[in-house]
Image 1 (cartoon, rainbow, N blue to C red):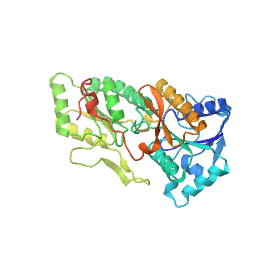
Image 2: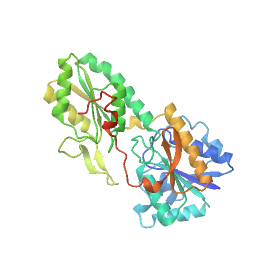
Image 3: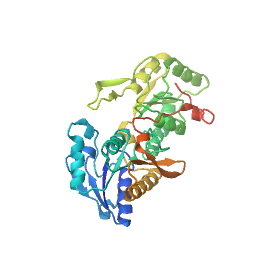
Image 4: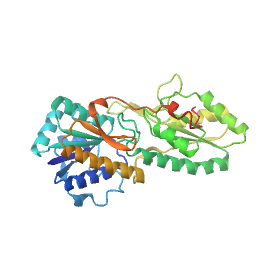
Length: 343
């Protein structure tokens, strides 16, 4: 069997570990793997590279993806789908493994449902917002990076009696913000799922000061919105893919908190630090097991499915069940075990 693989959407710790696992399991089963460069764009332009086991040495700990990645897909142009079909046929690809987030997997689901393209999906996102799987690789590493930053910021906040607002990634969901806030002992968190009140947040800070806690950490997801307002944004309102150009919520909240409380405040924006670098141990294991499971599914012709983690077990879920959906963070799930406060 000949297996193609591409990595789509934003980069994510663990992508190379998936590629490595697919190649090694495929080799054990006598299958050949070809990697398409720069996601769907490279597939449509017939840009590829052979992936023998020797090409994956040392990949387990490397961040990013050796195949490259970009956003967009075959449905963006009238001839995109036909180009995908032509290239797959030219390479005699029996199965295409798509490693990506909601956008890339939605494309894979449509190609399978509308044109019977033989695809297997692997969920990838630091945001942990893909429906059908409990966890996506990359999330644990992003949370650890954010938590490490919060840990370091506690000491400088305490030294200067400051409020520090830490802006983390999270366009539509608050998984990274909530988990890193809990792990880092933040005073409050702002998430897209629950519009924040500046007065409520300021009151949390005031109460801490009255209790002798003069330093406070507030974690804010980039997509957090104030009650009655739309997402904070800077620069162009939308990018070329139609996404709102988020950013600036941390700076906005910092300035308003300083004005409302009278306490000195600063902002730290972590940005792409959360997506780069080596994956942690959990993500290496999850990415490796998901990659091996994807190679198995391709070898067994179990197409139109996504590898999913349910509890401690991996399984398959139909891509059609995940299409166009978002897995939101639910604060109620942690209300009985966490002391986290929402602004």
